[in-house]
Image 1 (tube, rainbow, N blue to C red):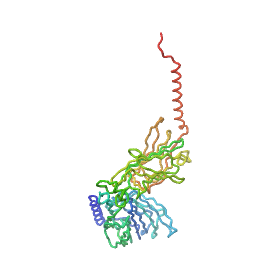
Image 2: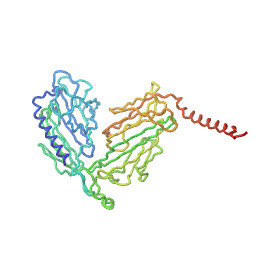
Image 3: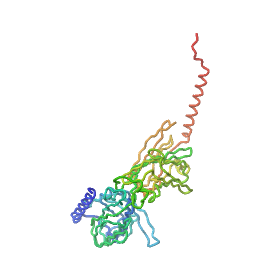
Image 4: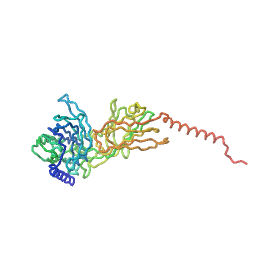
Length: 473
């Protein structure tokens, strides 16, 4: 309840601040948005916002930078923002991905607003227009209300937003569509014209809105999709030049929805599944927890925190491998599960040589479990002993540093490349590379060390047999 009141107060303060400062501000007026359409998908706990903008250059000079505006609350929950330019019409449309970076406007009004700049591939001349498609992905944005529910109750959540699109540009026409997972909507704020049909709420169209116009709204609706969140995932990828890659993944999973209250009844849960635990992780709603692993996987194991007490099933073919996991108990709101997944992969599928005589690992940066939000993802790439000059290449910003790891028969230790990413969503799944230098002579280090140890043991045994250590006169 406090979080709900705080959100409303923040929206109200932002609204009055905008009204106060917009008159004396000098926002970028190089562009005018002739049409804006926003579609907000609230089907799960990961919110996808698709924004289509038709941008016109109303200035006298060419311009190539379009500015997006977000509230600080949205930025705090923002997992990713992506933009592309659309060319063509109907079935012959093509899209070109554009670069998006956080920015600051020197002439922006003194309000609490965050900005992102879209860099166009080609500058727009005066009078020209282009169509942009922007994707926002938000996590932990839906607020369960009530915050605690019993086993037999459905999960209700609040979504706070504005019916008008926050923008530093004048918008001639705009429309917002909000899609809910079902028709069960407790309440929503109307701002004429507003229309609701089935699972969709339509705000608009609204004509000729000045820059920084907003109108706070909220939607209170039923959302029984499990709020599956991995609080922490540590994935260790150990490379062996003898032909194998060993992957070990440590999961800390939580149901981040409305907390469960009262006593859990296994009898009610099994006998009345349609009305008991509607928002829990259970296999009638989700076919277990599904992890998509690389093809040709082998030596797969799954172990819970206190032992291998859960069920799993592995399906493999030439294109993919799927591991289905069934926890030993259903997960309700606030409940947690900790487990480990491990598997081996053939080295030749993921390790290659570059043109500059370096070796590089090409692997997927992401969470194998489908539909998961990962609060903190850590990937550790353990290079073979003797590797030098490691350099990671990741398609999006991450934090990285180096560590050292010592295992059996290591002399100087192995270099570990550590990559960290917060607020990870499935859309981030992409390939990354780790380049490093390696001299083949180091592959003989452990063999020579073992041979030397056996030789020294043999010499010691021979010396012990032939030396007389008895005491004589």
